[in-house]
Length: 190
Ligand SMILES: C[S@@+](CC[C@H](N)C(=O)[O-])C[C@H]1O[C@@H](n2cnc3c(N)ncnc32)[C@H](O)[C@@H]1O
Image (cartoon, rainbow, N blue to C red):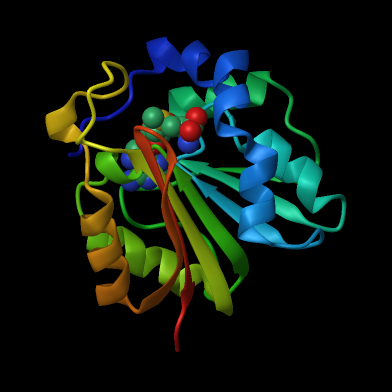
């Protein structure tokens, strides 16, 4: 856990093959957040999900593209995000975002980089509206496929599910999205 992504490899994140495999539009459908909503793309990197999400949320909606890395945000800015994207540098846990202001938070390939995952989930919970949702997608440690972050830095989906429940989320979807990548969608249960 907690090894940070090297911005030198950022091009890989927005390669056409990754779009074909992960299909951000399918993720948006699964999340079910309608146009006009605010989505937090936490650990947005150079914007793999930010751009499709901004398109999906439309002019009345918004995407907060948040990352700890100034360099990744610079790369995102170079890709000229549309007006409904707010680019935000955040601290490891703390985000300068108002309480209860976000409809859904999405964290793709981020969970294994968190140093204090429960604190991060609590911070996400703070910024979510009462019926807010969270989507986590990350690498399965138990796979024969040789790609992605090293297996001892990955997090089991079962651990993420446990953490989400501890913080007060109810699980809606838990599945292997691609053979070595899991997906969880949950909502706030109070
Ligand atoms: C593997 S990249 C994934 C980027 C993007 N989500 C994607 O799927 O293409 C992980 C990103 O999370 C960022 N990150 C790591 N820890 C973070 C934290 N605590 N809060 C916000 N961003 C973080 C890294 O700087 C990096 O840009």
